[in-house]
Length: 202
Image (cartoon, rainbow, N blue to C red; front, side, top):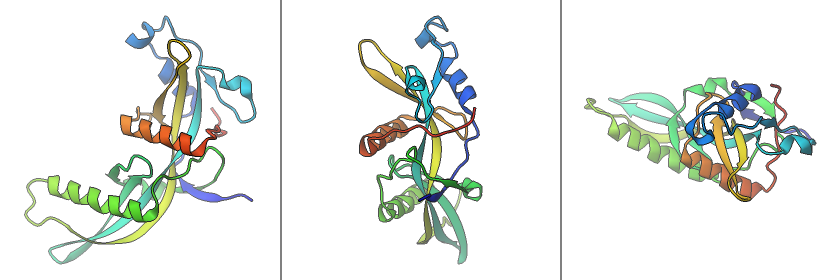
């Protein structure tokens, strides 16, 4: 039975992701050690020979919070990473679209209650850090919470010996993901024990 979920669409395709990981830098002796990057395909073991990339979908929560400033209500969307717990303001909620859930969609590490608490705490910290504002917003309530998924390109490569390491690229923005996201991906993969690639056209 097909399951439809909300997600952010891939904007950084596989070929551009592979080129990003292959670009000359000090770590690969400015291109001398670069090997062609395989792009993992479902049901194709040959495509998963290292180094290779696959697209995995990480869970997050879109949390709508009601705040008041000088008696006026204001709604603020936040995004809570369902593994790393990071909270950010979320302007891209309008870009969420339905997509079919596959094995490449990893399970959340936080439930809705934990995500709501994280959203309140994260937004409160953001408000307190803002300067030059006498009347800061007061968080009143969580109005809405919805699970969604965002795509990451995972680059698998071999280090010395038999050790395998990964690098991450945000498939929406084309930017490298931080260490918290990396830890979240590793924890999600351990919890899921599948790590199946999604079928994204290059």
